[in-house]
Length: 97
Image (cartoon, rainbow, N blue to C red; front, side, top):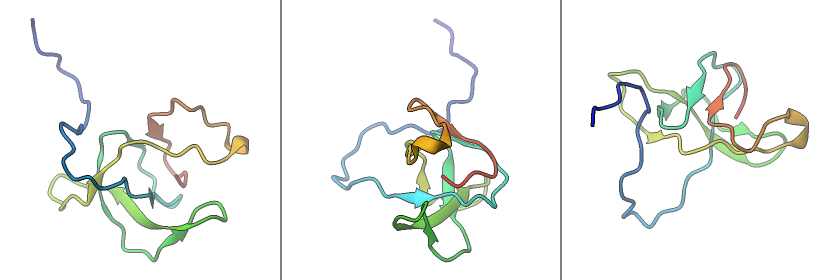
C-alpha cells in the first residue's frame, strides 16, 4: 500500500492529559483560512468576546518556526444565523471563530 501524499495537519494520537479542550477564538481581522489540524500560536491581542458570549484567548495560525500553543480540534457552530453547517472542518479567512 502506498503512502498518501496529502496535507492533513496534526492529529491527536493519544490523549493522556485528562484535560478538557480549551475554547479559543481566531479574530475576524486574521485573513488566513484555518483548518482542523492546523497548529496555532497566541495572538498579540487582549481576550476577545465571542458573539456577545464568553471571552476567549485569541490565537492565529502558527508559522513553521513559531512555538506551537495548540492544535485546532474543531470549530464551534455558535449561531443559527451564521449559516454554518455542523460538519465544518475549516474557518474561512476574516471570520471570527
